[in-house]
Length: 255
Image (cartoon, rainbow, N blue to C red; front, side):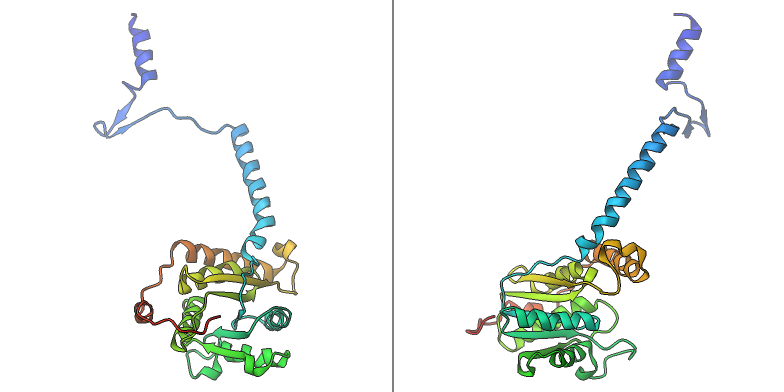
Protein backbone atom coordinates (compact mmCIF):
# COMPACT_ATOMS: atom_id res chain seq x y z
CA UNK A 1 0.00 0.00 0.00
CA UNK A 2 1.45 3.42 -0.94
CA UNK A 3 2.71 5.51 2.03
CA UNK A 4 0.24 8.34 1.33
CA UNK A 5 -2.71 5.98 1.44
CA UNK A 6 -1.42 4.38 4.62
CA UNK A 7 -1.01 7.76 6.33
CA UNK A 8 -4.46 8.95 5.25
CA UNK A 9 -6.04 5.74 6.50
CA UNK A 10 -4.28 6.10 9.85
CA UNK A 11 -5.46 9.68 10.19
CA UNK A 12 -9.04 8.61 9.56
CA UNK A 13 -8.81 5.72 12.00
CA UNK A 14 -7.42 7.97 14.75
CA UNK A 15 -4.16 6.04 15.20
CA UNK A 16 -1.82 8.91 14.33
CA UNK A 17 -3.82 12.06 15.12
CA UNK A 18 -1.77 15.09 16.21
CA UNK A 19 -0.82 15.03 19.88
CA UNK A 20 0.48 17.59 22.37
CA UNK A 21 1.98 17.61 25.86
CA UNK A 22 3.63 14.24 25.46
CA UNK A 23 0.42 12.54 24.41
CA UNK A 24 -1.80 13.95 27.16
CA UNK A 25 -3.86 15.84 24.60
CA UNK A 26 -4.92 14.40 21.25
CA UNK A 27 -6.95 16.03 18.50
CA UNK A 28 -9.95 14.05 17.31
CA UNK A 29 -12.65 14.54 14.75
CA UNK A 30 -16.18 15.08 16.02
CA UNK A 31 -19.69 15.64 14.73
CA UNK A 32 -21.34 19.01 15.29
CA UNK A 33 -24.66 20.65 14.48
CA UNK A 34 -25.02 22.31 11.11
CA UNK A 35 -27.26 25.33 10.71
CA UNK A 36 -30.09 22.92 9.84
CA UNK A 37 -29.42 20.97 13.01
CA UNK A 38 -29.40 24.10 15.17
CA UNK A 39 -32.63 25.24 13.51
CA UNK A 40 -34.29 21.91 14.29
CA UNK A 41 -33.01 21.93 17.87
CA UNK A 42 -34.18 25.50 18.47
CA UNK A 43 -37.59 24.76 16.99
CA UNK A 44 -38.00 21.70 19.20
CA UNK A 45 -37.03 23.78 22.24
CA UNK A 46 -39.58 26.46 21.41
CA UNK A 47 -42.32 23.87 20.95
CA UNK A 48 -41.44 22.27 24.29
CA UNK A 49 -41.47 25.68 26.00
CA UNK A 50 -44.88 26.45 24.49
CA UNK A 51 -46.42 23.26 25.79
CA UNK A 52 -44.78 23.86 29.18
CA UNK A 53 -46.46 27.28 29.35
CA UNK A 54 -49.81 25.65 28.63
CA UNK A 55 -49.51 22.76 31.08
CA UNK A 56 -47.35 23.85 34.01
CA UNK A 57 -50.15 25.67 35.86
CA UNK A 58 -52.69 22.81 35.62
CA UNK A 59 -49.92 20.46 36.78
CA UNK A 60 -49.12 22.55 39.86
CA UNK A 61 -52.67 23.71 40.67
CA UNK A 62 -54.07 20.20 40.88
CA UNK A 63 -57.42 19.41 42.52
CA UNK A 64 -57.97 15.83 43.59
CA UNK A 65 -60.45 15.20 46.40
CA UNK A 66 -60.55 12.00 48.41
CA UNK A 67 -63.48 10.57 50.33
CA UNK A 68 -63.22 12.13 53.77
CA UNK A 69 -65.09 14.24 56.30
CA UNK A 70 -61.98 16.19 57.35
CA UNK A 71 -61.20 19.46 55.59
CA UNK A 72 -57.91 21.25 56.22
CA UNK A 73 -57.38 24.87 55.19
CA UNK A 74 -53.81 25.97 54.70
CA UNK A 75 -53.80 29.13 56.77
CA UNK A 76 -50.93 30.74 54.85
CA UNK A 77 -53.21 31.69 51.96
CA UNK A 78 -54.97 34.78 50.75
CA UNK A 79 -58.47 35.75 51.81
CA UNK A 80 -60.04 34.49 48.57
CA UNK A 81 -58.75 30.96 49.31
CA UNK A 82 -60.13 31.04 52.85
CA UNK A 83 -63.49 32.06 51.41
CA UNK A 84 -63.19 29.11 49.07
CA UNK A 85 -62.53 26.92 52.11
CA UNK A 86 -65.77 28.08 53.72
CA UNK A 87 -67.70 27.29 50.53
CA UNK A 88 -66.05 23.88 50.25
CA UNK A 89 -67.01 23.06 53.82
CA UNK A 90 -70.62 24.13 53.36
CA UNK A 91 -71.04 22.22 50.10
CA UNK A 92 -69.18 19.08 51.16
CA UNK A 93 -69.84 16.32 53.66
CA UNK A 94 -67.31 17.46 56.22
CA UNK A 95 -67.63 17.03 59.98
CA UNK A 96 -64.91 19.49 61.00
CA UNK A 97 -62.57 21.99 59.42
CA UNK A 98 -58.98 22.49 60.58
CA UNK A 99 -56.73 25.48 59.92
CA UNK A 100 -52.96 25.22 59.87
CA UNK A 101 -50.05 27.64 59.64
CA UNK A 102 -47.20 29.22 61.55
CA UNK A 103 -46.36 32.73 62.73
CA UNK A 104 -47.85 35.56 60.71
CA UNK A 105 -45.28 37.03 58.31
CA UNK A 106 -43.71 40.24 59.53
CA UNK A 107 -43.41 39.25 63.19
CA UNK A 108 -39.98 37.68 62.81
CA UNK A 109 -40.71 34.70 65.05
CA UNK A 110 -43.35 32.83 67.02
CA UNK A 111 -45.03 34.79 69.81
CA UNK A 112 -48.26 32.93 70.58
CA UNK A 113 -50.82 30.65 68.95
CA UNK A 114 -53.20 33.49 68.26
CA UNK A 115 -50.62 35.34 66.20
CA UNK A 116 -50.41 32.62 63.58
CA UNK A 117 -51.94 32.15 60.16
CA UNK A 118 -53.89 29.21 61.57
CA UNK A 119 -55.66 31.56 63.98
CA UNK A 120 -56.25 34.19 61.29
CA UNK A 121 -57.77 31.57 58.97
CA UNK A 122 -60.00 30.17 61.73
CA UNK A 123 -61.35 33.63 62.49
CA UNK A 124 -61.94 34.35 58.80
CA UNK A 125 -63.81 31.08 58.29
CA UNK A 126 -66.24 32.03 61.04
CA UNK A 127 -66.78 35.40 59.38
CA UNK A 128 -67.63 33.54 56.19
CA UNK A 129 -70.34 31.59 57.99
CA UNK A 130 -68.67 28.42 59.28
CA UNK A 131 -69.89 27.59 62.83
CA UNK A 132 -67.18 28.26 65.37
CA UNK A 133 -67.59 24.93 67.15
CA UNK A 134 -66.68 23.12 63.91
CA UNK A 135 -63.47 25.11 63.35
CA UNK A 136 -60.27 23.93 64.99
CA UNK A 137 -57.07 25.89 64.61
CA UNK A 138 -53.81 23.90 64.76
CA UNK A 139 -50.92 26.38 64.75
CA UNK A 140 -47.29 25.64 64.00
CA UNK A 141 -44.41 27.36 65.75
CA UNK A 142 -41.96 27.06 62.86
CA UNK A 143 -41.11 30.30 61.08
CA UNK A 144 -39.64 30.82 57.60
CA UNK A 145 -38.17 27.39 56.68
CA UNK A 146 -40.30 24.41 55.62
CA UNK A 147 -43.51 26.09 56.74
CA UNK A 148 -45.90 23.87 54.80
CA UNK A 149 -44.32 20.64 56.02
CA UNK A 150 -44.13 21.96 59.58
CA UNK A 151 -47.82 22.87 59.44
CA UNK A 152 -48.62 19.34 58.28
CA UNK A 153 -46.53 17.85 61.10
CA UNK A 154 -48.30 20.06 63.65
CA UNK A 155 -51.68 18.83 62.40
CA UNK A 156 -50.56 15.20 62.40
CA UNK A 157 -49.31 15.56 65.98
CA UNK A 158 -52.56 17.24 67.05
CA UNK A 159 -54.52 14.22 65.87
CA UNK A 160 -52.17 11.91 67.72
CA UNK A 161 -52.19 13.98 70.92
CA UNK A 162 -55.98 14.07 70.93
CA UNK A 163 -56.24 10.36 70.19
CA UNK A 164 -58.11 10.94 66.92
CA UNK A 165 -56.96 8.60 64.14
CA UNK A 166 -57.40 9.94 60.64
CA UNK A 167 -57.42 7.85 57.48
CA UNK A 168 -57.98 10.59 54.91
CA UNK A 169 -58.01 14.38 54.60
CA UNK A 170 -58.61 17.04 51.97
CA UNK A 171 -56.23 20.01 52.11
CA UNK A 172 -57.35 23.29 50.57
CA UNK A 173 -54.76 25.80 49.42
CA UNK A 174 -54.23 28.38 46.72
CA UNK A 175 -53.37 27.88 43.06
CA UNK A 176 -49.98 26.54 42.09
CA UNK A 177 -49.12 25.70 45.70
CA UNK A 178 -51.46 22.69 45.59
CA UNK A 179 -49.23 19.91 44.25
CA UNK A 180 -46.39 20.73 46.63
CA UNK A 181 -48.85 20.98 49.52
CA UNK A 182 -50.19 17.49 48.83
CA UNK A 183 -46.67 16.11 48.53
CA UNK A 184 -45.52 17.57 51.85
CA UNK A 185 -48.68 16.58 53.72
CA UNK A 186 -48.26 13.06 52.37
CA UNK A 187 -44.67 13.01 53.61
CA UNK A 188 -45.83 14.14 57.05
CA UNK A 189 -48.82 11.79 57.41
CA UNK A 190 -47.33 8.77 55.68
CA UNK A 191 -48.73 6.28 53.21
CA UNK A 192 -51.53 5.09 55.54
CA UNK A 193 -53.39 8.42 55.22
CA UNK A 194 -54.96 9.40 51.90
CA UNK A 195 -54.29 13.07 51.18
CA UNK A 196 -56.51 14.95 48.74
CA UNK A 197 -55.96 18.52 47.65
CA UNK A 198 -58.13 21.39 46.47
CA UNK A 199 -56.63 24.35 44.59
CA UNK A 200 -58.36 27.74 44.67
CA UNK A 201 -57.23 29.94 41.76
CA UNK A 202 -56.17 33.53 42.26
CA UNK A 203 -58.93 35.77 40.87
CA UNK A 204 -56.40 38.50 40.06
CA UNK A 205 -55.10 36.71 36.95
CA UNK A 206 -56.25 34.21 34.35
CA UNK A 207 -54.55 30.83 34.99
CA UNK A 208 -54.61 30.06 31.25
CA UNK A 209 -52.42 33.12 30.57
CA UNK A 210 -50.46 33.19 33.81
CA UNK A 211 -47.24 34.36 32.07
CA UNK A 212 -48.91 37.66 31.18
CA UNK A 213 -49.32 38.67 34.81
CA UNK A 214 -46.60 39.47 37.33
CA UNK A 215 -48.52 37.62 40.07
CA UNK A 216 -48.82 34.58 37.84
CA UNK A 217 -45.13 34.57 36.91
CA UNK A 218 -44.05 34.87 40.55
CA UNK A 219 -46.40 32.14 41.70
CA UNK A 220 -45.78 29.61 38.93
CA UNK A 221 -42.00 30.00 38.70
CA UNK A 222 -41.58 30.09 42.47
CA UNK A 223 -43.77 27.04 43.03
CA UNK A 224 -42.09 25.14 40.20
CA UNK A 225 -38.71 25.55 41.88
CA UNK A 226 -40.15 24.78 45.30
CA UNK A 227 -41.88 21.63 44.04
CA UNK A 228 -38.70 20.31 42.43
CA UNK A 229 -36.88 20.87 45.71
CA UNK A 230 -39.62 19.18 47.74
CA UNK A 231 -39.81 16.24 45.35
CA UNK A 232 -36.13 15.49 44.88
CA UNK A 233 -34.11 17.21 47.60
CA UNK A 234 -36.28 17.46 50.72
CA UNK A 235 -35.84 14.62 53.18
CA UNK A 236 -37.60 15.28 56.51
CA UNK A 237 -35.75 14.10 59.58
CA UNK A 238 -37.33 11.55 61.91
CA UNK A 239 -38.63 13.40 64.96
CA UNK A 240 -39.44 12.06 68.37
CA UNK A 241 -43.15 12.23 67.56
CA UNK A 242 -42.54 9.95 64.55
CA UNK A 243 -40.90 7.39 66.80
CA UNK A 244 -43.70 7.62 69.34
CA UNK A 245 -46.35 7.18 66.64
CA UNK A 246 -45.33 3.58 66.09
CA UNK A 247 -46.08 2.87 69.75
CA UNK A 248 -49.33 4.83 69.93
CA UNK A 249 -52.42 2.80 70.80
CA UNK A 250 -55.40 3.00 68.38
CA UNK A 251 -58.47 4.91 69.49
CA UNK A 252 -62.10 4.16 68.80
CA UNK A 253 -62.95 7.54 67.24
CA UNK A 254 -61.93 8.04 63.64
CA UNK A 255 -62.33 10.56 60.80
